[in-house]
Structure formats: C-alpha cells, structure tokens
Length: 185
Image (cartoon, rainbow, N blue to C red; front, side, top):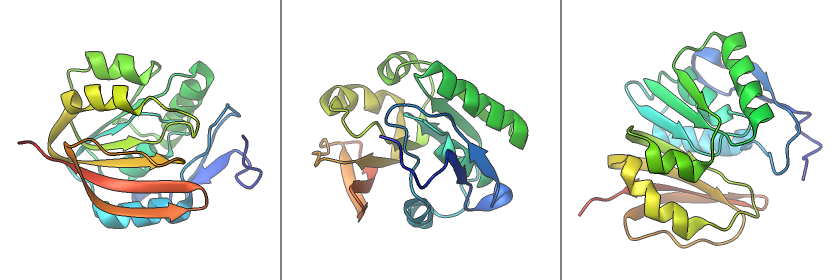
C-alpha cells in the first residue's frame, strides 16, 4: 500500500549527505523507514559507521544503504529483487556520487545462500505481509560477523532466533522494530 505522505521521496537525515533527497518508484509494499525511526536507529548504532560492512537486505528505496554511506560505512550491499526499484537505487547512487554501495538485483534468500561477504550491520525490512522469517533465520548466520548488529522492522510479532539477542526495540505506527546482536556460542 502506498503511503500518501512520502510523495516517492525521502531525505537522508545524517552524515555527509544530510538533507539530500532520494526519489523512488511506486512498488508494491515499498515504504521507506520513517525519519523518526532512522534517527533513533542511528543513535543506537552510533552516528559514524566508519569501517563497517553493511547489508541492506530488502533495500526498497535504498535509504538505509544511503544513510550508511553518508555515515562513513566502508562497504554497503543493497539487495532488491524488483528490477525497476534496483535501477532507481543505482540512479540515486550515481546522482549522489557514492562509490561504496553495490546494488544486487536478486532475491534475499539467493543472496544469503551465495554471498561470500560478512557484515557488521544488517538491515532487514521486508514487506509487511512477508512471513518467511524461519527460512531467513536459517541463512542469516552465514553472512554475520561476530557481534554483528541486526535491525529488523516488522508489522506482526516475530520471534527472534536464539542466536540474536535483543538490545533495543521500539514502535512507530504499525511498524515494530528491534536492534539485535549476533551472539556466537
């Protein structure tokens, strides 16, 4: 469902690209994370992501990838399965002259199964109706560094797997969100 308030644009709220606007195409279930939520999240993570490898798994507008680049993340992968949406992320990347974001136009599970990379921070914000959490939990540890931080946004209550320890949580409208840490036994 389209949010009439966002007008297919969202602004970067912090870092070197603060106040820059990115635009995005209409797509089913594409709803960028609200400014308020991103502000809270990056306060939790710390404003500077220097040296961090970041994964934006259900990228949508790409705002989490752009926020991370604006905050000095070392390397960012944005995974988006919708071809037109992925192309728009590429256009915004070029417009903003950001070199450290790689856009992968693929399914999240295909990416998780085949990626040789490991990440310090992972953003997981699938469409609200998405229900494949158990499958996601099977593949997620493959790409996580020890003590990785995982941000998860969801509409209906989910149960975190034993390898994720909840650090912080919040709610904004119908969105629930949690910041968890990857715990290795």
